[in-house]
Length: 160
Image 1: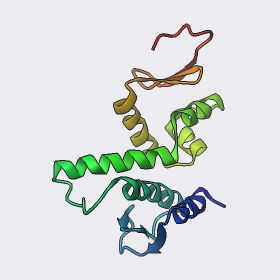
Image 2 (image 1 turned 30 degrees about the vertical axis):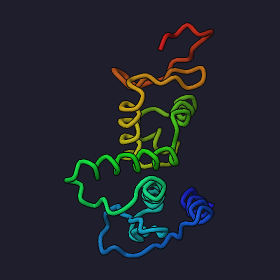
Image 3 (image 1 turned 180 degrees about the horizontal axis):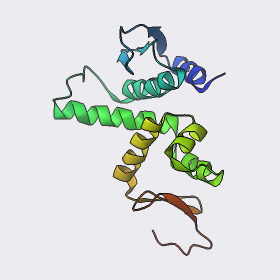
Image 4 (image 1 turned 90 degrees about the vertical axis):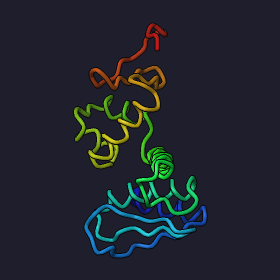
């Protein structure tokens, strides 16, 4: 079973019906209306997975129509839902594991964690907003800026 198929099952387990329909465009798109999530059937499966995760985030965090992104409150709600979706997709430990297993660069890391490079970049930028430029992950420090990498912390020498 693919990650997308597993996420569809998870959605159904919390009372969400997932329907794939043709939105008439090749753009990444989905909509959450009450307890039904509509996913654009024209997308690649990896994109469907990412969009479904975000739409589940909307289901859990958003009430009402927030399509007008000129409204600052709607943009805030969009970011909250997107962040909730990101948590479904990957956590900082997944980035550390990708690097520990030799992934170098965004494309290799995205392939390792099974997301698109664009989504991985969005998630890393969101991590910077949440955590700053360093994240403690177990006995590793994930460095997001000024360079990107991990440092293993032997015996608590690193100060965060």
